[in-house]
Image 1: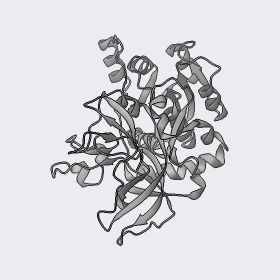
Image 2 (image 1 turned 90 degrees about the vertical axis):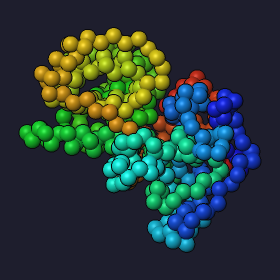
Image 3 (image 1 turned 45 degrees about the horizontal axis):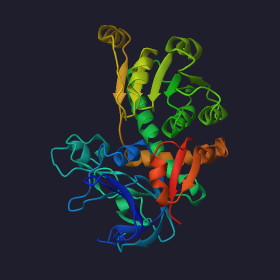
Length: 362
């Protein structure tokens, strides 16, 4: 079986031509033929050997955690899936510890021990291979009509979970339940999908990203009806004047300096959602006293969120259908190019430009 793998000890990334083909190991498992795998910043950082842990007993880790595939075989106890169904897998698996209430209640995205596993990231092989096997409990059936865009499901779940948490936090303001104004920081796939989620929820949404117009990301943003401003041209103070009081900031850039700079533009009672993990070191100077004063006197919330739950994958698949109807062709336009597995190293090299690159298995 062909698979894309990273070898941390020898610091190699290569395509395996003879990786062991997975077989069903329990009656609740499903065997899936991989169709597409999205490549994101996490994959780039693993391929750069910043992190990534192979399963016990292996010296390599098969990459890929944003996947869509076709069911080719089901165990005898599998219900709800059949051969030929389109499926999307979840990424994180719960830790084994009884003391972790989050994992025991089915929310490994809130794991308190850190001893979880993540396919393609930590202690479990990923999906960037011709086939994978997964328990039916971690698979979501996708409508056939989403075949060309279902690979965007996992990055969309980041925004789905973030919005779900924001709505819970808004309950502390019973007079302000209507959606307000939102700013998205970063016009990559996670940012653009986040803008779609916020628009669907009724937020007046503005995009704030580094690149100056014209560029492909700005074109997609404005085609959604989201005004685009470049941080190279518009200061945070000017952005706040143009966008109005900012109720929610959805950070999707993974750039600490830009994020904390924009935090200054958060409005009273606002919520700032961090989703990006910085992939590079950069100097950061903070006026700690002024920041604390702002947060306290304005009743602001700073929220970090990672991974997603079962319900967020269901919500993402429902939203993909809504988005295709509301913005025909825009999801497809986010996928810049599709590549064979042999081009994985070129994709993670980070010099191809565009928005989203995908590995396909034909």
